[in-house]
Length: 171
Ligand SMILES: CC(C)(COP(=O)(O)OP(=O)(O)OC[C@H]1O[C@@H](n2cnc3c(N)ncnc32)[C@H](O)[C@@H]1OP(=O)(O)O)[C@@H](O)C(=O)NCCC(=O)NCCS
Image (cartoon, rainbow, N blue to C red; front, side, top):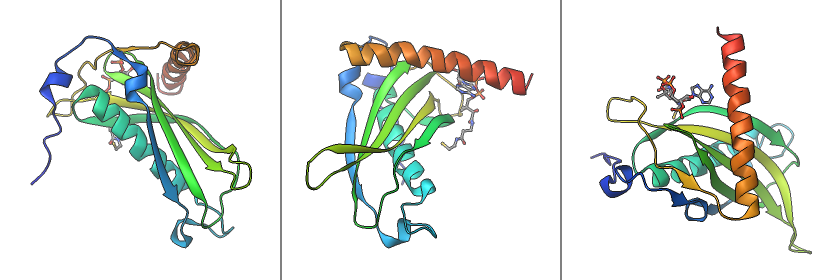
């Protein structure tokens, strides 16, 4: 049996929700199977960790099925070795209408200093969809802290750039 993926009290409530409620942190360990020929975490593995976390954020916020329409801003800062514990941070930056941008960051925690060291980052755009796979409106999100407001504003700049680029390349 498959989960229907709809939470009516969330999906049908268009009142704005606080960004803080969308934040998610999870962890993973780099295993030998997750590495490439350089013996470091494979980029596709890191992307998959981010995709899954972004999907959870989008689904929980929209209260319905979602799918990925685009991924950009991908940056790998630091190679991660086998045995490293990764921290995956995800947060909803902004909802447009049917689409929403989720910001993802992976870090490692330095065992000596406890400092979080950036490993990778990406922006995932998910679209809320109905049972026929058609885009439907997602509830708006309300930033509160200065950091949330900065991400909210920058998400609009990124969206405009994405749409403009997509139109230029596929008129
Ligand atoms: C995602 C999907 C449902 C969108 O439907 P669509 O009819 O193509 O899209 P629309 O043109 O109606 O746009 C829907 C939203 O996506 C946004 N969008 C479209 N292209 C985009 C792009 N390149 N980058 C970011 N957002 C984009 C639109 O701006 C719109 O957002 P808004 O309603 O907030 O303004 C459809 O393209 C699809 O099913 N794609 C395959 C998804 C998939 O298989 N993903 C991988 C596994 S999850």
